[in-house]
Length: 114
Image 1 (tube, rainbow, N blue to C red):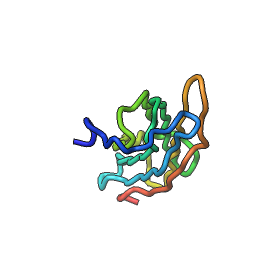
Image 2: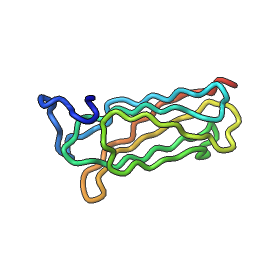
Image 3: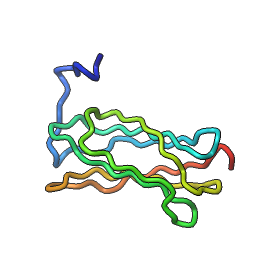
Image 4: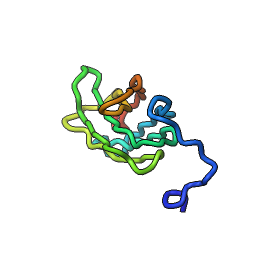
């Protein structure tokens, strides 16, 4: 029930202090999808997040835009378009359209097929 009724003692941070705390990318066994777990600091103002996955040649094989997430713990699945094995690099960037933005956070992963 924390999603609907978060603990009252959490410190929610201003946009200047909101950051990505961790990002994890785990390939599905089929080698065509990746599960992304993203944790950000509790926030006062909902941020925007851009996620992109690049293959070893630097080609973008997956991307997602998250607009004003409701929670600071996110889990999503991305489909790897035209990917032929790994390794891959996932990059996530948190920002506010009219305000501060953070340095991108990255995570490397391979596919179960590679």
